[in-house]
Image (cartoon, rainbow, N blue to C red; front, side, top):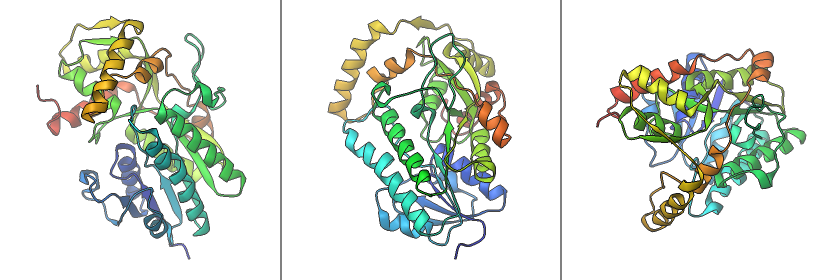
Length: 334
C-alpha cells in the first residue's frame, strides 16, 4: 500500500531535481531519492530523505525506489550536448524512462511527473510568436543526440499515458538560479560571462526560467495537471545579448563582446569535437550547438499558466540568484 505523500525523485543530485526535492520537502512530502554511488551530494544537505543507491539503468534500484510510493518525479537524465557514443544516452534517457514508468505503475503509484524538456518540442521561425506544446516537430528535424533522446522519451511517456499509466509531462526551458553545481550549459555561459571568459557570442535566444519556479511548476503539474498532457515551464524570452547584459548589470562589470556569425564557426566546432574524442573531455563548441543557435529558442508557458496557475519571475532575478550562488561557492574566481 502506498504511503501517504511519499515521493520518489530521480535526479535529486542534479540542478532541477534538487530544486524539486526541496520544494517537495517544504510542502511536507516524505522523500525517497535515487542517487548514484559516485554522485556529488551537496544538494541533499539538510534534506530528510531515504536514499536509494543506483541509477536509471539499474531496474533493481528503480523497483526499490517506487515501492510503496504515492508519487514519482522522474527528473534525471543524461544531459550533455555532445556525446561520443549516442547509444548510452538513448539507453539512459529513453529505455530507462519506459522501465521506470512501467515499474511505477505496477507498484501502484498514483501519479508520475515526467521531466521532459523544451528540447523535445518544435521551434518557431524567427519573428514568429514563441513556440508552444502544439508547435509541430518531427524526429528528423531534431538536432543532436540529447534532443533526439528527449523527443523519443517524451513519445514513450505519451504512449504509456494512452495505455493507462498516470503520467503528466513538464517541459522546462533554460533553468537558471542557485544550486547549479555541475554547472549546466546555461550556467557555464553565465559563469564565463561573469568572469570575462566569454568575449564573443552568437545571435540566439533563450527562455530563462528561475530553477525554483521550474520546481514549483513540477508540483503544480502533480496537483493540477491532466494525465497525458504536456506543460511548458518557461520564463522570460530574451536574446543572448540580453542575457549577457543582465550578467553585466548584476556584476556591475560591463564587458565588450562581439557577435559572431554561425557559419564560419563550423570548422572550429568540427576540430573541437575531434579533440574531444581524443581527450574524452566534452567540447565547449559543437556543430549541434551552432545548429541550435540558428533559431531563437523562445517558448510560451501560457498553457501552464492557464491550467496549472504557473508563474515565473523576471530573468534578471534568475541571473542574479545564479551569480550570487556562484560567488558564494567559489565559481567566479578569475
